[in-house]
Amino acid sequence: MFDFITVFWGGISFIYTRFENTHEAIIDADTWARVQELRKNKRRPTRTGKTNMFSGIVRCADCGEKLYYCTSKNFEARQDHFVCSTSRLKGKEVCPTHYIRAVVLEQGVLAHLRLTIACVANHEEQFRKAMGAKQKADAKRELTAKRRQLTQAERRIAELDRLFKRIYEDNANGKLSDSRFQMLSDDYEQEQEELREKLLQLNEEINQQEEQAENIERFISKVHEYLDMDELTPAVLNDMVKAVYVHMPDTSNGHREQQIDISYDLVGILPASLLNDLQNGETA
Image (cartoon, rainbow, N blue to C red; front, side, top):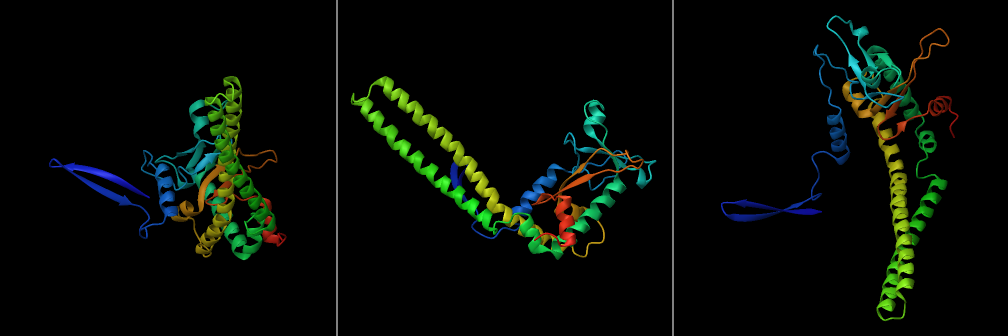
């Protein structure tokens, strides 16, 4: 792919041509995309000058909005906390207060990361199968069927183009009445529009399915980078995690329990049942 760029200087125009992907990039496309995403979630210091690595990453599990990082010069580290921005700005009647202490959040995410890394590293093949990797026979069959549908839709669109041209010529030559031409052309156009929408959907599904296996392998590679992780750092968090969702606390049994869901980069939220099965060797 290339672009033409015209530059005027001193009354003379210069035309430059920019070619893309002609040499090895300084950073790969995945890293570039990840950096751009992180820039959108840039952490702004509070009035105290303090920041937290979870700012911009932690969200409310109910409304999906970000949680505010709350701190004070008088706070001890254990008092810093996050609270739902919707609840804080619009009231509890819009979204109940989701509150979690920063230290508790860090401990919970670190524990889950360690569990996930251990499960995936020790049971790679089981993890691939459980995640529905492309090499599974049923997934291959589904992918083949979608590609067949895609080819059929493309052929039918081309056929409709030929039919439309024919009825246009017949109408121009007086072989087809205006009303008949209008009815047929409307039908053909509607069918083509439906087929184009189907093409878009099929292409998206095929791309997602093909990328799924690649993402699983890339996630496994990431896991192996952190086998010896003993603390949670901003670098590890930003590389492994896309978002953390905090649920309302449950105090029904007299104790405060709170669920957090971690959406990992490349693979999303991993079900607890999957990790338990991997731990127990029950995934086949």
